[in-house]
Image (cartoon, rainbow over all chains, first blue to last red; front, top):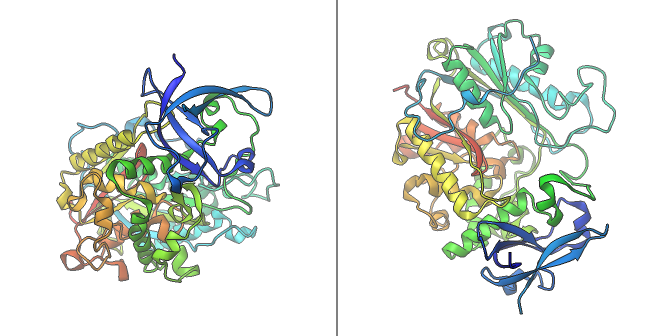
Length: 84
Length: 430
């Protein structure tokens, strides 16, 4: 796997039911499709990209690259960033 | 009797290609009992959903003109949609468990109403729609002759459905970590829909406004009784975002209430007070997305399949369907059902154009005449009740004007494109 993909679609979370995420609202909630198999979908907050949906900051088809972020409890999770 | 179990897979009509339902027109729905509605449970046992369920059954029996002793079957959707009561302390029997407080099982209602002649009980998960399909098949199969279908749902004190987990394993590690659950799924699907077909959230307003309008003509509903103010386009457009592009008016309002329906045979129905509505088909949809995310294409394929099965098993065509009440909780997936059925000729991507026309009950395209969850509160059954009332010509101000107010067929179902159950009704068994 190349660790590359594209934005498939998204929403912006303003009122998550997951309480631990409520402190970082609003956040992007983006569906990523992998370049090698677009049917495989992963999720991302798209770190580094603003959540202003009205400015169309997030566009489907935008290339992204996997990064690994450390959570508060030390675990690594796959995240995705827009390729500059 | 042993504790009631969920209905076996064999009773459901899940696959395409099953042909016309073998019991088409040989099962009737006759009566409805709706309990009062309230926003939340106030902690008073007289308004626990068990008590409300008893009220709904009593009203249903009165509506049918029969007694408790006439009932020989009960099918329940045994869990409510709200939160559970635990870890708070339970009460004295019959409120010494969740049964009666956050859901009502067949066993609970049989025991606490003293039903002496019940020989058949079953459970259907998720929605009343599922329990209705179970009852229709059971009556058709001869397992019960006079069968109640019940569901109660509640809203406990406090915020609804909060997830306090700080760690997650299993399947949830791929979804909950980012906050993905049903509501983002629906918002995402709608965003994809808007992008594909060049439309936007604002254009959903006429549908939601009309749902509230229909709800204010539904005397049993929550808004009619508690918030009778007209709902406007401005109200919709100013709603706060929950998951952009899904706002608070796209979600349904959790409430506390219960319902009961009476199913029977056409022969037995002749002795009851209300006109029989015949069951022409029942359908199950269980689609499996390729990943944890259901794509737009999958939602469209699932709703295509629902339409095929609804039509195939009933022998109807889309133009035969007079009353169409697909599910609306959330309002952002209703267009998938409308377009899947091609009701009134609406094809993929055309729902918002259709909403911009006349969809009132007085007009030629009375879509979702119940007002649904959006117009009445969260139950998942207003659409079923409306279908039955419309065909019995007792929908009051909501009575659709097509065929001079005498619609002949109706379809309703819930819940999501991938996971839903559907009923097809008619005024004639033929």
